[in-house]
Length: 270
Image (tube, rainbow, N blue to C red; front, side, top):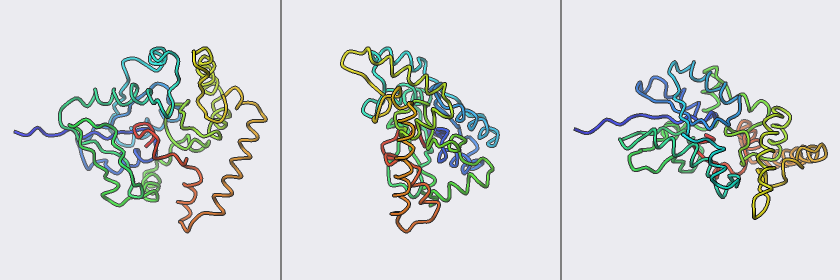
């Protein structure tokens, strides 16, 4: 007798996975909604997940690594995670997810939209079959926006102050303007991120930093903040003036979303 697969929908605290959870509500009664918690997420992410959980009427399973970020940072001798070495994703998200999934058949529902051309598997374990309901249903960014609006859930609250995607407060995929917005909105989290960065100065082989442009200690200076804001406004105006023939909602999305979306970690940011 063939074993029936489990149905697991991966939530990140982002707009697409949230819209997918709303879209799938009631379609698969046995659906398991899971969120891999690093304990370093934005406070708005936790608030948003609580709101989504109440809407779904079903508990979101919070998965945590046995050992947290500070343990792995020590094991990696203080080397901060980066685009080139994403050990935070591996040990705080992916491996806990795979442990939870186990080795039995699983159908994993992932929120890739119809207007995205990429394979965004969270795991490559052979027992996991990945499906993309939005692609199958032809739901694009405007469709996601409609789902979130009609449900009353709306976009994640961190987007109100300018964070473009979910993830840890010190995520290295943040743009400089997002670091500025973090400084202005959650200065204590910015301070914690800077503490991690400052400690990396003692590492043999050089200083490591979250942001490619400059260390956070320098970025927080009023002069740097002003230059980053000015540069962002100039970039936004250029993007607006040279925008292709797109719908307004698509244009606004292009202006806010980072150019490196395809490189971002799926399990963290969808």
